Length: 429
Image 1 (cartoon, helix red, strand yellow):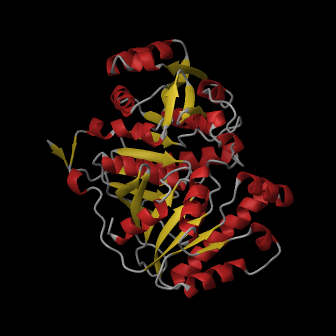
Image 2 (cartoon, one colour):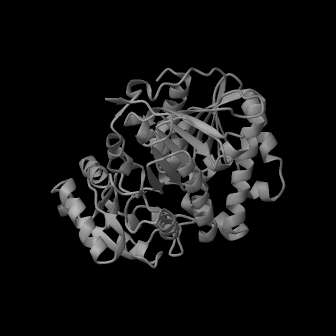
Image 3 (cartoon, one colour):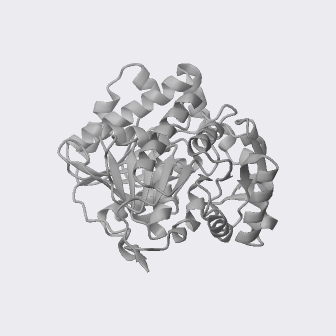
């Protein structure tokens, strides 16, 4: 029997904007009509969808602030009538020993008056797998993947049980691959045993999509689930036959100019920038020039105007060594803030000149850009690359003209992602 919903079924809280879009992409693929909000909507705001994803910018802020924002999101989602809740974080478990994954998970469990949840950041389609509690990125352990050099959340320990235990006072356990291989009933039995042992948070292994579907089934009765976007694969079927599965990803066409903005320093984004610059125009945002007060924003906008009629790349992407050198000179926080603020100002200036399509690389950059564009919520469309869908704003900017956006986590996407994203936003993919 088809279920026609007038209120949301699944309420999600994501700790960054591209992660939220990645999660929403998974839910749309599962047939759930999905809307992503940018921040917590005002009290009383009602949105009709099967799934709602509240995108926060809480991954690297102080833990107490992340907890407060997440609880505010939970309160709004509960008011929408959601039956189950998902706390989404990065598939590389980006965090520090102070948080924010553990503190937020604890606070959400407390607010929901529940005593157990899983933690599973696995995303096999993008090479993130968990085996015996250890997180792999492709064929290497997390701490050998490049994430050990992350400027804000360096990941130097691949064992997620240890990592999470350092962030929480709750007892952390493990649901191993060999239990998951036996099916959902075996996982439910393991959850009951862990609860009896006083375990409140359990890392769940997953080496394939099949494992994620098993976990989704086994966790159907949990009020809260935590993990990466991959864990959402097995959740839609828990809500019965949905109303508009075939058209859940449909988006109308948007006309207008396009731009690519890249702020991530990840390996994937560096390769994507290099691919673009080999044959197409690009302008580099230099953080040192920004610190000297040079008119970099104005220069970037002028560069885009000079190339009117073709999309351009405006990027601050640098190698890890270059990033470290800038951070040493300016400080980590100032360097990141300068770049985010500049790319946000460039996006706003280009929007005012008629640009209506934005491809954005980097979670922090995406957050700064959508805020600068005054985007309040996004309708989620078809997938461009694993974890990255096309989206459209709902009621964007002062003139309410919709924008087409592709918001990409730094580590996601093939080398030619920028070109593919632009084709998708053009409706020609």
